[in-house]
Amino acid sequence: MDLTLPLESLRYLQTNQAFLGREFLTWLWYHTESGRHEINLGELGIYKLYVDDRLVLSSSSGSAHEQALRGGTPAYAAEALVALQSGKLVHEAKFILQDNERQWMWSMRADDLSLRSVRLPTVQAPDASTHMQARIANTQLLVDVVETLFKRYLEVRMSAKFTEELQRIQDWMLSKHTNLG
Image (cartoon, rainbow, N blue to C red; front, side):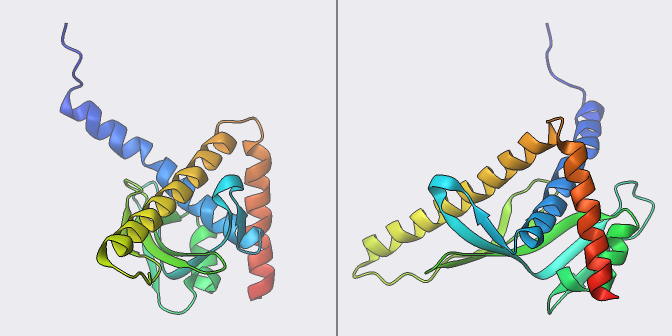
């Protein structure tokens, strides 16, 4: 029995399941702003999370162009709000994560949610081995934070409370409109 999927089926799944990545990045943007950028991840700690200087929004229908915003604070730009209101979701974003002592920066695309252009916290270490261990630990912590956030999103997405979450996101969009206008 051949259990492999035809190439067309795999392309269909990849194309039509990519919405989860766009929804996750959009939810993450909403979540950072609605919580005054503070996220409590239990055992992992409490962090500040910001959308940095790159935000790309695109339509899931493929009929509209993408809206790429760079520089400054694109999450607060009127163009970002207009793109959201027209039904576009985040396709790519650059984030900053901070705790009391460290800062991470990275970009993420909705297609595969891989971490790109990662900048780790500066490490002061007495020797190369300790320095490398600290960089590995900082990398693992960033991966754990993003995985925890994605798990939280999926828990909400698959629950009966997702309708309530959508209403909160709409309210957030309205408050962005009020703050811009």
